[in-house]
Image (tube, rainbow, N blue to C red):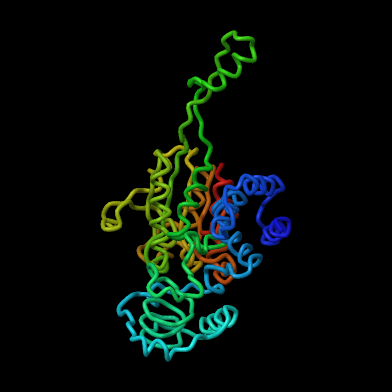
Length: 390
């Protein structure tokens, strides 16, 4: 049985080895769990998955292999929270309950639910067909049906659900998803992959004990580096205009970086960097910092990260006076080249999906100015950007 389960995990591109399989078998032999599919789900996920970014793949593989343990994201469709908001609660008499008919077998119920999800486009309340609340539909919450699927309800009410469907904690946590509130914690781990350095001035207690034992009891002191994050980061955020839809992502990334790096400096710009940037958007026109001052202030070993959609008219980059906000005497390209010449490690994170980049000339233009080090704002993109900065 577990060999086939193992093969299904590999089919979904999970990096599982025979070692994890043997660990799972040993855990079952020790009766860590017994005859409980939900506990087996938790145990096998804990053993077989080493990185949260693969939780979604595991859930899909588990859903395919174990019949009746269906995908938590409801057939690849997320149900908006608004659809399941409790406003009324259906209370029926015994006579009214008796008149309702069940859909049939579990397979028939799930097939019907899948079809309804394909057709449904908005919230429903008090009905008898769609996914909603307070009705007699077989699908939803806070209503009544003799046999259906409970979705999003807090607790049990009638003990009639054929299946309870709740969102898993890591829904849509996938390495090709845009960074968002549900996977920013994993993004923070990617940021932690910067090298940590330090002098060898801390006692390695376990190493010293081991070395002393190996040395027939003669003391052999071992030292290790005092680990601290010595990376210095300089971030430039594009704000306003076409970047407005990405404000939340930018805030989350900024918060993650600010909490991780002791030496972090940040500035804002609009569309393309010109002769100056700013720290306070409310004072952007009166309190600016010259690029020349940034070059003089921050050493070349700072890791520089630009965050923006890089979407604008190409002339905003290539021509003097191309800025949409002021008359710049030198082009954005000139200023970008000055920055990339001074700082040895520069990347650009772009929130636009990578498959759409080719439709915007300015994206390719700026990508060239950062030596091809533009990456999408995805888990994989951020990881690749971090690797290129090291």
